[in-house]
Length: 164
Image (cartoon, rainbow, N blue to C red):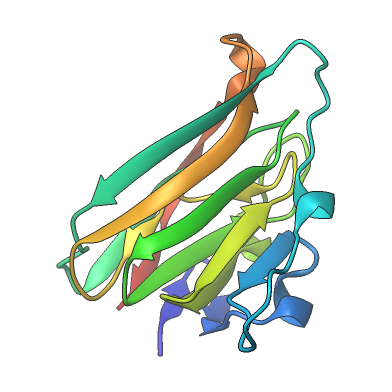
């Protein structure tokens, strides 16, 4: 179990990634159990007609410490952002609701399995992907136009500590 300690006596516990729990932040991409194709087109949002699709591959080292200091959150105000695991066991998702700036007391932490992807809705604040069990690889999809709206960062002061 993971727990977030905020300097105020607020504690937020991690929870398994489920469709219902993650709904305020985006869409969970669960791998179909049957031999079929499932479309998630409705989760892909782009609010700028001139932005181009962007697909990247991302390789990450595991987070090896016993704690994670959340000092920066980011958002993509005009685009959804999708992470599809290619080779990962478990990873940590930290999100806060959309708004002009994130509210640390409203952070939520989810543990995702390697067969689950996520699409963050436009404007959803999130921490960078944190891999828990070993090196990992993801495919990442979003829309970009090269401008400031592609990604915005917010310094969390004081940092929020998440104990692993």
